[in-house]
Image (cartoon, rainbow, N blue to C red; front, side, top):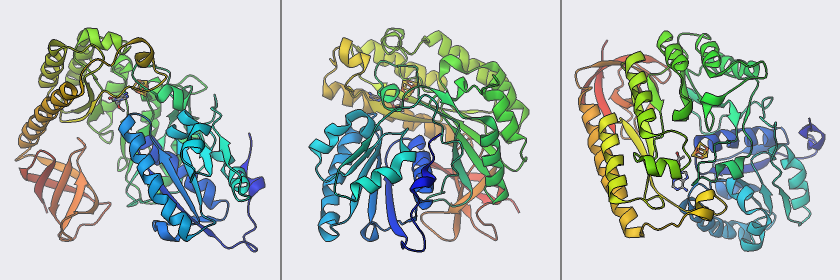
Amino acid sequence: MFKIHEQKYHPDLDPKRKLYIETYGCQMNFSDSQIVGSIMTDNNFETTDKIDEADLIFVNTCSIRDHAEQRVRARLQEFKRYKKLKPGLIIGVLGCMAERLKSQLIDEEKMVDVIVGPDAYRDLPRLLSIAETGQKAINVILSADETYADINPVRLDSTGISAFISIMRGCENFCSYCVVPFTRGRERSRNPETIVSEAQDLFNSGFREVTLLGQNVNSYKSERGSGFPELMERIAEIDPALRVRFATSHPKDLSDELLKTMAAYPNICRSIHLPVQSGSDKILKLMNRKYDRQWYMGRIEAIRAILPDCALSTDVIAGFCTETEDDHQQTLELMKWAGYDYAFMFKYSERPGTVAEKRYEDDVPEEVKSRRLKEIIDLQQELSYRSNQADIGKTFEVLVENFSKKSQKELSGRNSHNKVVIFPKHDFKPGDYVNVRITACTSATLKGEAII
Ligand code: 5AD
Ligand code: SF4
């Protein structure tokens, strides 16, 4: 394997330079930024959260919707200002936009010096040394086996309680609307030993929650053939005081075996993110989701049977190609039936290179997409509120993560269902498990009193 250490700067000769990383998009990108942070700190950089003191600015980007890319482009324009103030400043674009646009991005956005795809982060020190000579540097080669398994992520912006662990990379599902299989490449799983030892190290250093990340964690497979339920078991066994979460599950692969493993370990959190995307069989087929409405409902029934007290969240896309009012109504009906606790909801955004872009017409007018999305959001707001109201009077074990945003006298944490709970501080602190009785709610948070 290509090692970055050959590129190390000489610490005695070279003072540490400052890296500022800004991250957009999914949790996997946040996890990748921590890997990048680690590679760079090994090469005589230190991370900073103050952009104006940076010698190097990285933007880790997302291509999932056009809007995400436009935000990054607007931000790049703002970076020109910092370049004027500090002429040696280097700007790098990382992640999915780098992979999708490749050298085209350098042509279009002249302030960019370095372009690095998600599988090329080990090459960053070499690319930077090229950029320092005033040349543009690019590496967007995708890999079949890179998992960054040996790199210990720098925990950026961390409260020291909850951490992400990336367990696999890439996606081969090729949902027809989605750019991820093109920007993140082939699916590959990380060696389980390195995952378990990362989780153990986190626990030893005070972390109390890990979220195992992958585009489709249910298809995790180690070289020896063990699957995701075995991996979850090993992480859950580290300590009963370590909470385990995971994201994301593809409904086509959510197995009863996983649900049974969850049921066997109280420290595996009672919360499943199961993206439905649409409630219409016709649309699901066009989306190449490889399940139908009946199958999806069957999976929820299995969750309810095996894990009766499990929260459910989902992703929904409004206005996919050919979606009629009837298709849209089926999505709303399915949402009501499932009674989701939480949802991420989007308007369909056509992405270049995908099957949907090539074969189907993006024929739902913008104002219809907006109206349908609003109906979906309004419904979810009601479902979330109803779900939170049903929690009033119940007591939950809350893992405290931070002070509440509004007051230093209140703490904020989450229960096993992944709901945010706010309560008066007393003598508790981040990292504590506290039993909190819920007394009030909004559609977004629960409020309560610690049981002392
Ligand atoms: N347009 C809108 N939403 C999309 N998603 C993925 N691709 C697109 C797209 N082209 C949504 C899906 C997915 C989530 C991560 O982003 O709902 O589950
Ligand atoms: Fe995209 Fe589908 Fe893969 Fe998720 S499972 S990343 S929506 S292709």
